[in-house]
Each structure stands twice: as C-alpha cells, then as structure tokens.
Image 1 (cartoon, helix red, strand yellow):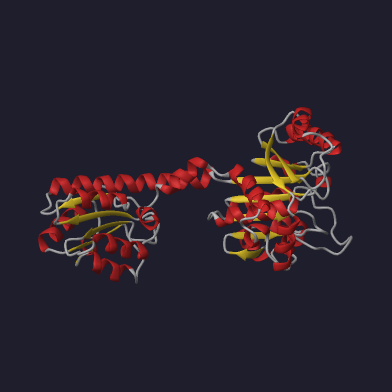
Image 2 (image 1 turned 90 degrees about the vertical axis):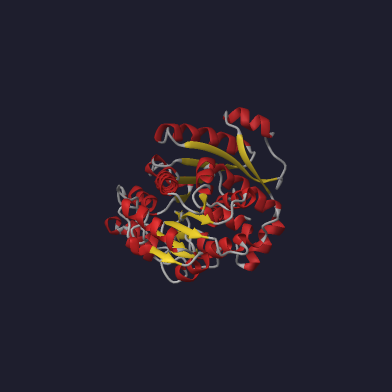
Length: 404
C-alpha cells in the first residue's frame, strides 16, 4: 500500500516500543505498508524524546507508554520536540478509560492496550494514515483559501489610514500569517517610520524594473520588523520617481500575493484614477472615513469606481478617529446616504498614539489595552477566516497538548 508523505524532509514513520513482541508486530505492519522496519526502535516514550530531539520528527509516531509513571508529563515532553502535524498512536499496558480519555484529550490519535493484535494495530495505523491525509488536505486548502489582498484607501487625507494598515498588518502577522505591507505613498509613506525602521530602495527598484520582481528580489527588497511581517515602502526625494511603467504595480502586487498569505496595500486615493489595476485583484477593499459631508460624497464616488473595476472585492467601510471632532453627519444618516453599513469604528485616542510614537512602536504593540488598539483589532477581525482557524486547530496533536 502506498505511503502518505506530508513533508519530504521527514520520515513517514517511527515507532518506539518497550517489548520484543510489540516491536515484531509493529515492524510487520510497517513492512506491509512499505515503510522501513529499521524505524522500529526499542525503548518507550522516554527514548523517543531523546532521539527526536536530535532529528527531524517523523510524520507518524507509535510510542509505548508502558514504562511511564506519569503519561501526561511524558506526552508533554514529546510535544516539546515534535513538529506541528505529527500524528501519534500510543500503546500501553494499562486498560484504563480515564487514561484513554486523557490521551485523546491531549490530542493523541488513538490508544491501544497490549498485547497487540495484528488486525487491531493494522486498523489503528490505517486510521492514522487517513488522519495524515486529512491534515495534508487541510494544509493545501488553508494555503489556497487563506490568500488575501486587502487594499486600504483613505477617503480623506489625514483619516488615519496608514496607522490602521500598519497595526492591522502587525496583528495579522502575529497570528502566524506570512504578511506583507505595501505602502504606495512614495514620497510621504510612514510604514517604516512607525516601526522605527529605514525604508530602503526596494519599492523604487521594483517600480523601475518590474521584470526583476520575483521571490528573491522581494526577500532582499523588503524590511522586516519581525519574521512574519515584511514591508515594502519608500521615502523618495521629491520628483525622483517617474510614473510607474504600465503593469508595474499590478505585477508587483501579483508577485507579493504569490509569496505571502496576506498582502495589505496602502493606496493614496490620488493614484486610483490613473491606476485602476490597484483594485482589480483585491479580495477586500477598506474605505477609511470620517462622518463629514465631504467623506459621504467621496464614499459614494469611490463605491461606484470600485464596483466598476473590482466587482468581486468585498467592501468594508471603517470609521476612524471617531469622537475627535463633532460629526457633521450622524452615523445612521451617513450609512443611509452612502448605502453601506459601518463595519468597524476606531476611537480617537491621542494619548495612546503619542505614547506609541514616543516608544518607536505601533499602538497594538505599545498600548495593547487602549481603546485605540481595540479599534484596530476590530478591523483586523473582519479578515479572520473562521473556517481556516477551525481547521488549523485540528492539525496537530501537539497543538492541543500545549494548550492544556
């Protein structure tokens, strides 16, 4: 029977058992599946922890807990050396319902009581292989379905869009998503500054030489506040940047989408007229507004433009700096006039913003409990894929164990 491989860098299978009879039976079942019998080792879970701490962890483990005085603690030690996605079948000498439930609760796929029977072990191994196949499917589905390209547009200048984008990108990356922030304000971009970093020339080079943009180029061009977050931005000298070549912006966004799970694009509104392609590939578009008459007018105009060039994108209307000044238009009247509900509200909180700026950090990092941070988090929550969050929670036994 063909084996299943989730990661070619890892062995498919290993077993650590305490007695000769179980070792022989496990080796026999492994041989039936075309797995190496040399991956059946003497020694129980303690031996597995010692061995796996110095080698890539196989995708499927059979571990013997017969010699354990504290199975729960030993499983925790095994979790510490395992990789996400490992499927574990435990075997032992104690026929105890409470122990069985504890192991399943910890995320172990199944528990068999010795002496092992060939047909029972064979069925349990098949169940584990099925689980591995499901994990592989979930991984592929998550990576394909979780791709997002989110375009942020300030309906008015000074609406707070750039601060919103940087905080939303930080939050997305903190959730474990490979996230990129593309700041297209070539002269006055603040994305790097908000992380106390220098922007570099990566974005200008990408626009001047669009044919060069690939994964290697992006790796060198971006700046990284931390591992999961990459920023591509500029602070170009005035008048030094020619108009982007035809197709340069769309090629850049396409390349970034191929290399990151989530791409957030901060687009100055004045670029939209000449570069409608900026919106064409967006999965989501965020209009950042206040409750003024001018913003109501421009929301209506932008909505019509978006419907024309990006009919499949999901539109979100976010009210920023709420409470900074008395609203010219009541929120309900604003929603009625633009024919779109407000998806999230970000309160005005100068104290939190100033404190974060003085620390050289963004608000959700420097002031995570502030009202302003909670507003940014409410926007980030709009793009959480609940199905994929649930799928990710099922991926690994050690993920469950480490939450205990």
